[in-house]
Amino acid sequence: MGSRKKRVGELRDYEASTRKSKRIYDSAKDLLPRGVESNFRIVDPYPFYISRGEGSRIWDVDGNEYLDFLMSQGVLLLGHNNPVIKKAIAEQIEKGMTFALPTEIVAKAARLVNEMMPSMQMMRFANSGTEATMHAIRVARGFTGKDKIAKSEGGYHGVHDQVLWSFWGPEEQLGDRSEPKACIFSKGIPKAYSDLLVPIIYNDLEGTERILRKNADSLAALIIEPVLGSAGCLLPRNNYLNEVAKICKENDILLILDEVVTGFRLGPGGAQKMFGIKPDMTCLGKALGGGMPVAAFGGRREIMETLIPNQETWPMSVFHGGTYNAHPAGMAATIAALKIYKQGRFYPKMNRLADELFNGLGDITTDMGMKSQVRHIGSMGFVYFNDKEVKDVRDTQTADWQFVFNWAFEGVKRGVLFGHPKGEKLFLSAAHSKEDIDLALEVAKDCFKSLTK
Image 1 (cartoon, rainbow, N blue to C red):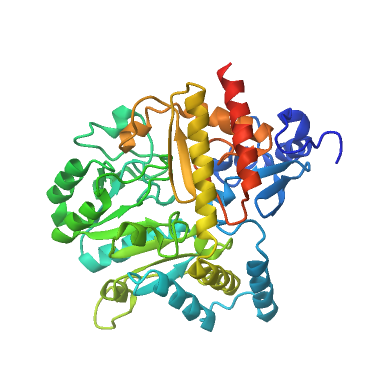
Image 2: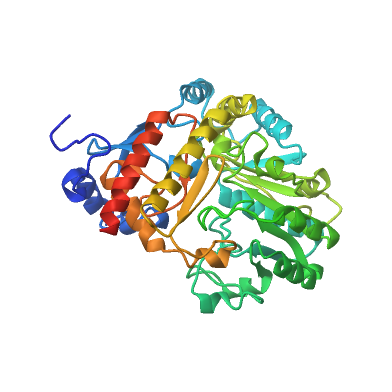
């Protein structure tokens, strides 16, 4: 290795060790806003650009190696460049790239999903979590004949106009917790959508029940993440999800469980099996495609059959389309990944290592006298830096998010991605090892020491 390419765990001067990334950034920023393809990828002073990945590691264009706990935001449940998935994709590409016509492998993928998540009696494939939630909401409205949807504050369901509300915002925009308001998150979204959105506060069962019952006549569905990932890793308390499912059923409100993040990550049956919930509809993405852009939405047969055209009515159906839906290469990767998930052999070790990592982070922060709370479930987790107990989504805003960002960037300089480079939840994969966990804890302690001086 060159003199500038230090081993993982050693402190790097960011600008000195990412000179090629800086050159790419200087060129790319004239073509791409802030030189990136997503606002989530904006990093100050500039991002580092990745060239390859293998197992639990990635390398940037300057040759710097990183121990990865971002895992493509939870996509890579089996690690980078998994050979089984890579082989399946290569074999399919030999037969053809895409046809915009049905293929047999779509039915095979759907059967595997159904076997692990029986609540998805029928389904359709899409290309992203955003598409999955967008189509699920449309189907829910078409089936119920009602227009409004409810969602939890802090819940992230993609970037379409209907759901980019009450994701994050100033307290005065969110409104009183007893009567939360639809808080717009992006410019360019018609304010008229606020009339169709009913916010609830996750883990506030009393408030959730009151709001859902009050709006039941106009609510087509409640869309909810079983674990709020964009609020860190906020877990359901006091049987919240099961009680909410009962409230929805009693009031003819469809329950759409957004398992884009938790699907297959928390086990072959996802969060719905873990928590014993049978949703009306489910949205999947991320781990579903094994690294390829694949998503799905589905649920009860009678709901999904609203997609089937009826020549005697107008409109004839709830419409769903897309040239790249069920792309053959993506379906090949999906089948290969689902077969491994279904066997489930890697989950015990991965979850055991996750326990070591997150419990270790808790021990370190406690020993150092830091005000923090570590929350994790299975192979995903987060550290809230504050002394107020985090019970619901409003509590997460009291955490020191700037410290999270600083920790993440200190990790980058030492060759460890503690989630996103600008601060986000952490993910493990089947490719992580005990040595990875030991190194991560050593580096985390070093980062905390540096930041608390």
